[in-house]
Length: 394
Image 1 (cartoon, one colour):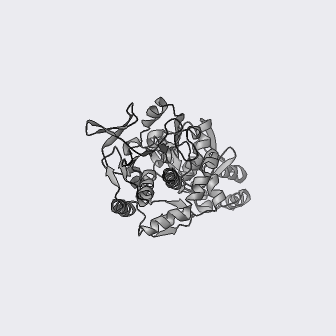
Image 2 (tube, rainbow, N blue to C red; image 1 turned 90 degrees about the vertical axis):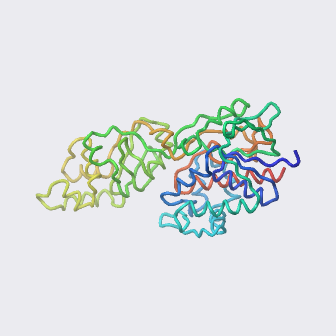
């Protein structure tokens, strides 16, 4: 099989960066994807502004990966956030650091970057075959694909699986590969939704009036963890950055309770003083709006468990620590990412499957999770780089 290509199955960020590295080193590379076009989830991520990575100190950055951090450490050290931004800049997509520390391309879209990337891959001789659904292996360990209703087999010198997790299945990552790998003896863990909203039993009045409205700049706490940012009221419950940051903890203990600080920039005493100094005769809504700048959605939330007390100490306590009962995650079909997948015990130091020599795994297929903020893409790129370089070292 000296003339056999390296086969990369999955044309998302992990697979495409692996293809770039291998082809730049002179390897013949063929990328397969079962969708009609490549990198669909990558393009979806860029619709609201493509958050490539984050500029925070590395130790803090690494901590975002929780229990998987020790496994990802060497990969994230090999391909650090500045490497990712330099790569984007090299494609003509200049980047900038936002006020939150997140790093974006100035175009704020994925499509210009992807076009430039695909042009580079084409120039390096990478072949991309779409509508090729991977079925597993033959008895002789050739790769099996269904291409437009016809089964084909492919011999590869090495294979990288970069098939994604099980979130947003309509974009291509449906997790169906898990049964194939389990049948070959590779250890996997069940998928769970990550970076996902949570169901809340809103009153009909609150849901009808405030679904689709944000809770701006709130602090949310669950157990010993806390996060700040904008949350969003939805028909089914609540979602947004601070919810996603706490999703793993909330998911593992749901149903559970979170506490929302509607004015985290003010100390409890300051809130109480502003309420005490409010104009006599104002309605409660007027007081909350004038004294504290609370939005109608935030004020409505204060009323969800019945009319709040008007005395300043009790009202201040509610504003600083409003209790909200959450029922369960909304589900994997609307989760931004998933936890679970290929166990770290199933791969060696180069991300090669112990049960299937010559086959490597990269990206969200591996059992890790992280909040939004650039951490997801950074780890997808870093594991793709790592697997490609492991093949080059063979």
